[in-house]
Picture 1 (cartoon, rainbow, N blue to C red):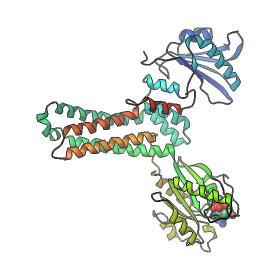
Picture 2: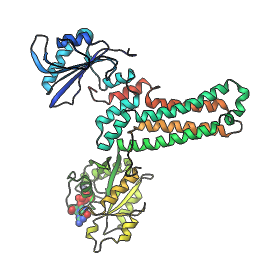
Picture 3: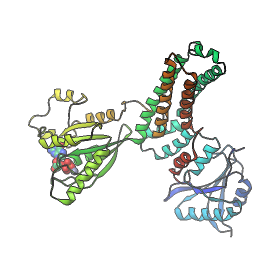
Picture 4: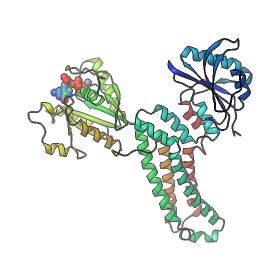
Length: 460
Ligand code: GDP
Ligand code: ZN
């Protein structure tokens, strides 16, 4: 029995455009009779039936497979009918429109984005973190991200969060019991080793938070802005990193007047690299607008890659640029065109380049130093090379884990005081628990749900 029921919904589930197969999906609380009438034959649950898709007047629109999944053992937890026909937009639309016309009597309507998955969540087929993983799996831009999204979808992340919740619940039960017998309040902490338990949960949570941050990097990537004077090789570097020509490269200073964003992957981590117009004083109005935009991009950067010509490392114009860079954003100093130096940088320079602050020596033309640059970018992103994030996480998850950690720390603060106030301790535990429950969706506002599911594609 599904806990939630609503109008039957329908959508084309496959991507728009042409493909070998196109799938139309219908979900609703009680679809069997309607589905069998539509297909003009009995439908054995979970069996593929090969049949013509005929419209109301008997015209054959397509032929293909019909599959009927009775609830609750279906994707949405409701009855689901899937029609697999040919993947052309016109043919799929004809079948869809005929289904809609014949479903009018049962209130069949087009699905909203993400509505199938939302029903899966509302019917307890998936928790919220798993539902988000469905969208993340579809959107994954690298193998590593897809693998991690799949781990989240199968519940690996939810299981970690549930385990933390469980430990907090046990602690809460002890506290609540003690609150009922105020005379015992004083020894509560020693009696149940509450402080130790709290410390252990906090440590476990810190581990989950670390992994979640890695998962977030894997999902969101990092916004890197290339900054520097005209002609130092910003566009060439972007092309070298991207491995294809995305930005215009010319020997005339001031060529890149608009922003070019390229997404590249390093070890599966998406980096969004913004090439900017070279920073210099100019009389040209168009170029000046480009330069203003560059500074706006720099203000939004997560990492600034300040590129200089290795032949003029002490150029005062670069010192001016450095002066203007925003505080608190990591700046990677990179010296390009080492191939033009009379003598290539010594090996001691290369060693120094592994230190955090030293400038990296590269050549966008020969590719020298690019591996070191990639490694440095990953390090700044907080990525430990070779680690595989076991699950993908969203910013929302990281915030919830941080909130939970803050409440656990506040609880520890109350416990540390001699005049410990047990109900404050209890309240912080409750808040920590609530923050964790928000991840899997036990306590979630309708607004948040609406926002999460509206970002799905239609038919999912
Ligand atoms: P931007 O204005 O900073 O984007 O610079 P570009 O990428 O357009 O490059 C300006 C000029 O420098 C072009 O002629 C490039 O071919 C040249 N250039 C860029 N990187 C290198 C490099 O590593 N070595 C050499 N020899 N020339 C380079
Ligand atoms: Zn350029």
